Structure formats: C-alpha cells, structure tokens
Amino acid sequence: MTTTPAPESPLSTAHQISPSLIATLPGNYYTDPEIFRQESEHLFESMWFCAVRSADLDKPGAFRTVQIGRENVIINRTRKGELRAFLNICRHRGARLCMEESGEVKRSLQCPYHAWTYDLDGKLVAAPNLIKMPDVDRVEYGLIKVHLREWLGYAWVCLADEPPSFEDAVMYAAVERLGDPAAIEQYGTENLALGKRIVYDVKANWKLIVENFMECYHCATIHPELTDVLPEFADGYAAQYYVGHGAEFGEEIKGFTVDGSEGFAKLPSVSDDQDRRYYAITVKPTVFINLVPDHVIMHRMFPMAEDRTIVECDWLYAPEVVESGADVSKSVELFHRVNEQDFEACERTQPAMASRAYRKGGVLVPNEHHIGIFHEWLLEKLGGSHAGPVH
Ligand code: FES
Ligand SMILES: [Fe+2]
Image (cartoon, rainbow, N blue to C red; front, side, top):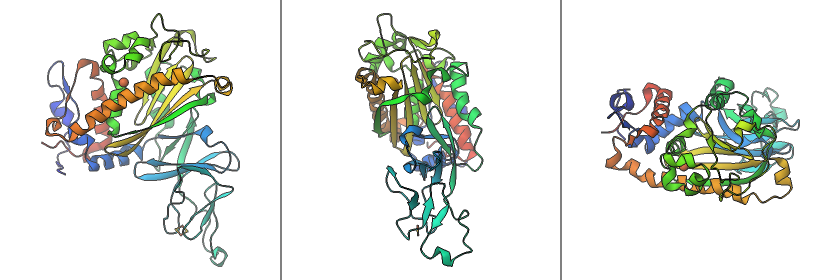
C-alpha cells in the first residue's frame, strides 16, 4: 500500500470538477485495509454503535456477541433485567469468552480455557484456586465494561473511554432529518414487535452502502416497486435529504407494500401529516431507519472488512399485528427487494474500487452532491492520519 504523508484532503483539492460534478473519494478508500483499520478506530470503536435489539435479549442470561471494529463485544441481560456490555475477552489470559453469536447462560459466563467465571454484571466470581489468591480483586479483574444506552428498542454501545453525548451524536440525527424532536417518538419504535429479520452478507465496503442509501438517483433504474409506491422517487430526487420531507405515497397506493395493497392500521401516535409518507434517516456511521405509517424498518450494519458488510434488517410492527399472526410478507417484500437491489448494485461497484479506472474516484451529479458532505465528515473523523489518494 502507498500512503502519502501529506494530510491533504482529496476532496479539498479535487472537490469541484465542474459546476455539475464533484469528486467521490478515491478508490483506495474502499479497498485499503489500513483505511478500514482507521475507520474502525475513529468511527466504529469511537462512536455510538447500534448493536442489538433489546427484546432479542428477552431474559436474564440471554446474550449476543457482535463485532464492532476490531473488538468483539458481548451484550447480556442481568438477573435484575438490565442490559450490560463487555469486551468478549477473559481477563486471565485473554481467551474469547463466548464463541457463539447468541445464547443463554444460567447465572454466569465461564471462560472455556481455565474456567474463570464472571457473573452477569461482569464481576469475577470464581476461578480454580481463587480462594488461595485473596489479593485478587474480583471487580478489578472483572470483565471490561462497554458503555450502553437504549433507544428505539435497541442497545447502542460505545467503546470509547469517554463516549460522545448520545443526545448530540445519535438522537440529533433524527431531529436534524425530521425537523422535530418528537417526530420519531411518534412511531413508538421501542414498543413495536419484530415481524421479520433478514440478514444480508454484502460483499462491499460499508461506505458504498451508506452512499447508496443517501441518494435516489438510482431509484428509477433499480427500484421499480419502490418508485411505484413513491412516485417522486422516480425523479432521482433525494427526498430523504430535505429536512422534514417525507415522500408521499402515490394516489392509488393503499399501503407501503410490494404491490401497493393495503398495509396495517397506522401506528397509534403517528400524526396525520406523517400518514401516507415515507421518511428515511441515516444515523452515521452504521444505521438506517425507515418510517412508514404502519411499520418501522431498522437497518444495522456491521462492517466486517474493507470489502464485506453484514446488514441486519428488522421489520417492526404493532405488537397486535405480530401476535395475531397477520401476514406481513407483502410489506416485508417491498423493502427486502429494495435491499437486494441496492446491495447488488453495491457489490457490482466494489470490484471497480480496486481498478485503475477508479484511482481518482468517480463523480457525483447534483442529485448526489450531499454525499460529498458524508465524505467530508469521514475525512474529518479520520483526521490528518488518513492515507491519501494513490495516484
Ligand atoms: S484465559 Fe480465561 S480462564 Fe484462562
Ligand atoms: Fe436504493
């Protein structure tokens, strides 16, 4: 890999190519393991990261492990019913405590190597010969805690010693997009039930997925079902970028479903002006939220490598819809198709990032210029240490 010592931003030099075109990031930003490492350090391991749906950990002892940057984190529910997050690493000699992605323990987490045992609050409670070592402090040698906040029914964790303000860094994204702090609360997301979860293993850099989500220039080409439901998307108009604007359902459309057929009753607190509208919110770096009158779609990305991203997508409905066993397949199918269409486009793009054709990157048309703001945000987060473009 070639790294240029000069911390010059590739956008400040080649940002505006012509009145219509501005430059994207150079291709190496999507392929270079060193840049991915820097993103892990400065974004995924420093910012709030939406890790797990709280209700998935439905009883004491239930746990889930997730990869966040270079760290593996275990999130579990304690005997008191609270959620806790720890680095998934034994304090003795560093063995990974839980290899499973999810599971349930009775009262404690035991390391499979020498059997150091921790309670669900992370305290060291047992180890072979521990009573013969009275000087070992069981809290000090407990699991290393990770900050955790719950919002919208999800556990958001932060690996930083001093996390950024959750209100400013996470909740503000929704306010900024919807223009009203109460607007997202009206969907009551934390009280909704899981109707469907689909996990996508996407062979593309996480930024290609963010960029795709931020623009609608591609909607007319690859999303026939979505543009049928939201006709204004056919113009490539990035409706999701304008504050407070929700894309309106087409006149003939009865619900946010794959064929425009009837959905379910509007969620109880959704207001009349939110009815028959679709809102999309990006919570950088890894979360997309879609709001429609009768359900909420939460996307959580897990960047695994510079060319691989796992996306976990939850379709959330009023509890009575899920409990009644109602058929949610038509509403799931709409965004599942959108996801497949989008991820296929991202996978189609990824190989080009390593091509000489993309050494200096591509271009953004006016409908996509706001993606440049995301690029500038990224470069600022990576600071002066980021690798420069390879020419
Ligand atoms: S590494 Fe876990 S008990 Fe030894
Ligand atoms: Fe799309």
